[in-house]
Image (tube, rainbow, N blue to C red):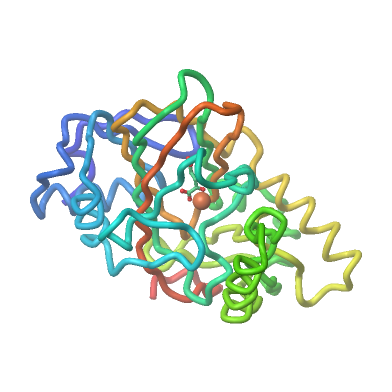
Amino acid sequence: MSASVLNLTPVAPAIGAVIHDIDLNRIDGETQAAIRQALLDYQVVFFRNQKLPAHAQAALARQFGSLHIHPIFPSVAGVPEVIVLDSHLLDLRDNELWHTDVTFSRTPPLGCVLQAIKIPPTGGDTLWASGTAAFKALDPALQQKLKGLTAQHDIRLSFPQERFARDEAEQAKLDAIFAKNPPVTHPVVRTHPETGEPVLFVSEGFTDRINELPEAESRELLDFLTRHAVKPEFTLRWQWQEGDVAIWDNRCTQHKALFDYGDAHRIMHRATINGDAPYFRETGAAA
Ligand SMILES: O=C(O)CCC(=O)C(=O)O
Ligand SMILES: [Fe+2]
């Protein structure tokens, strides 16, 4: 089913659409297929006025694949697949780094379903950037060079011990998590497994170094690429209302949650859909 049957409004030229007139508590197979197509077309889709109980949010996410349990973030009681990002309970500053979720894993998530539970009176917007738009805009010679490169992604970059280990017990827990999640290698350009499109797949949040280059050159290229990837023309900025749900394709996007609301209270619930190991294939043919 094509996404055109949905009542949908694009958010920004490169990325994002709002899908209207849908109650995510009850969607049939046809609507689900249309949402899936919209996700491929727009990379992030938004739904207003939802208010999904945690088990319903998990059930919705499960329609896209099996669900991921996060090694660090806490979850809703009885629903381990739905993590709780509560500004009064967690130090959320690191979500301000532009990142693609969980790329410290060999098989980073396919996507996520994020719901706004409590939103500050002002601030707390989230930005998304399109990795396909960013790749397309690069100089062809650089595109070619990047296709041969791989990069290391490291959990430590976004979960620094000064914020996630405040005492010895937390430190021991964090050390065990780090030991279980050593740095992994991903292609710098990945082929989207469904669209076949090349995606720039590095982010400030988790990408540590480019394996094939000397340290200084790696740093310079990564700094350039992570800045390029989030130029305003590849991004959108979403101003949340409580009950909003966002679903994003985590294979071709990165995002950043602004932490500009001081002590105000902001709570988000996220269900994370398991994905596959990224790869690059020159033909761009879907797997
Ligand atoms: O709080 C947000 O808006 C997004 C946080 C984040 O990075 C995520 O849920 O993956
Ligand atoms: Fe995230």
